Image (cartoon, protein in one colour):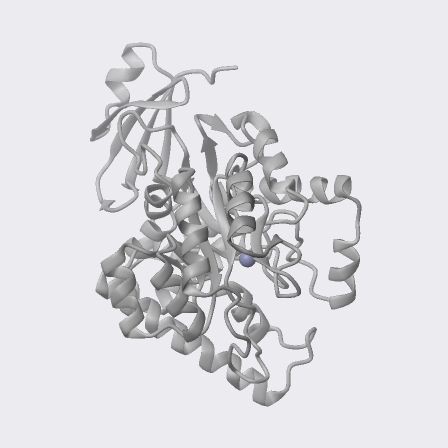
Length: 399
Ligand SMILES: [Zn+2]
């Protein structure tokens, strides 16, 4: 069903890279922006029979570039989390659909799923293809690749020698939009460091990247700690996910090689803000704070140096709920010292550009994926948290 044509006048707007402090008039037909013009043209359009809507502030639909749809981030009790994972695939699929609905309700019109072992993300991608599904669109990492007996079993399959890497990556590329490479484990918060060694050598990681690229797929690498970051950059992955314990010299290499960075503050910040469920000691809480401060400093540097930053929440992780977490992550970017415009770019046009989408900003010819707010986020970032209306491909989300 094609959504009916309409016009929209907003008092001010953000196009995906820049703020405009003046009115704008859009004409939307078949879910696409046909025309976008400075000024308030409501009277002329009404005279021509257009239905004209109004609002205070318009911006592109948000993108959450790192989620796990099949996990429920509202669960913080470790026992409840492991019980969740033991559910059958049908229940987990229902949970994943609910996650994609929460995302859309928060104004997130597109998510990139960073892996699940059942391939539920690919299934939800199909179900969410219809903009009237009530779900955010899904770019899916399907099942990722990892080493046997190493971190990442909930989201990745094991690969072994070169032949098995080639065969797995080729097979995964038929159905996955991107290839997820599990390069390191997670941070040991008690130690305040990544304590394991990278799962892949530079040569093996490069084989993953070359095979994926030959299949027309980008590679996003789960990676934290200097050893893993060095491997990821040398192997030429397309984006680094998490990337805790970043260094300035590594950022310079990322910029020069065009690697994007999804810093995912949320899962670590959630542990620091609510240390009780995991029972972190006072010393570990101090480690969490130091890790977050160091991360913020490097995200600020990355922006200054020209590294492409993507807002991704790791929603589904403990204490990181689908949908609303995106506001927390954007606030972390602003706290780190990025301008509102830079943070919003990382949450709208930057990921769309990184994913190779044809229309990363709100412009004539773009799908009408947009959020209408009651006030400009420049007057207070919290305005983002209460989207008045949300559209995906011109279809308004019923909330
Ligand atoms: Zn993740």
